[in-house]
Length: 293
Image (tube, rainbow, N blue to C red; front, top):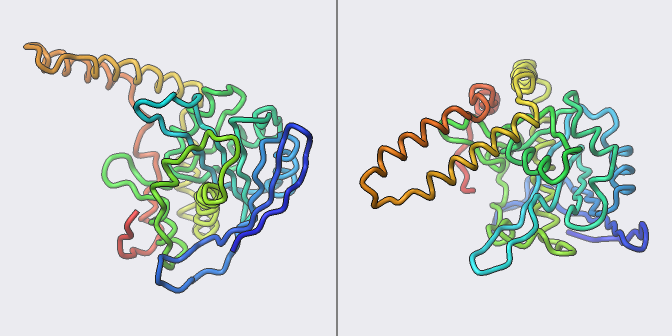
């Protein structure tokens, strides 16, 4: 179930509206949820501003995700990502194309992303936040609610989180789409549905659990303890430098073990954010059978 309407924003920008099934069932199983996403796909800052005005004004939470093109051996590496940014408010989704256009010039987008009172819900948000900040320092993602669970121990994929919180089987992600070229000039409809769905799921999970005061309190505690984006980016940069040192070591050298231990001790001086601040969503949802991701 998909359709699109072309909306001409200006000569050098584009904006489309698509409709996709929000929760497709696995192959061979009946659909358990009839909700439909309305997806705005654009690279135009003015269209982003309009979407935020119409859908995000007064929102307590937004689903959030980004997509970055993979670098493959033997191919020209893409420009630094992320290449796509996704937001969701209810069944309305924004897929903003960053590889072209002027999306990052949207003051409304910068304001919403940096507002900690508007919760941004997703998985692996610290990494997304650093990548986004590195391509444009105006994009400071605050109010990050990572619903993937603690780093130590088994993290939960967003699909499993949604399965537990919303109920009903959800079709597995296509790895081929996940590893597709997100830096192309125009995304394909399969990519749009994939990108929008993760942001939609983040918003849907929050909506399903927001009536639970203990969930709201735990979410607020995680956000209150988040590292600001400039510090988070600096820590990530330091960790990358140290990891490159470790990777450059000669594993056949006699002093490899000693030098590797020294570098790992250095790495511990730049810890990632406290994993205790990451929400263990399993504490707030009914246990369901594991789903393949």
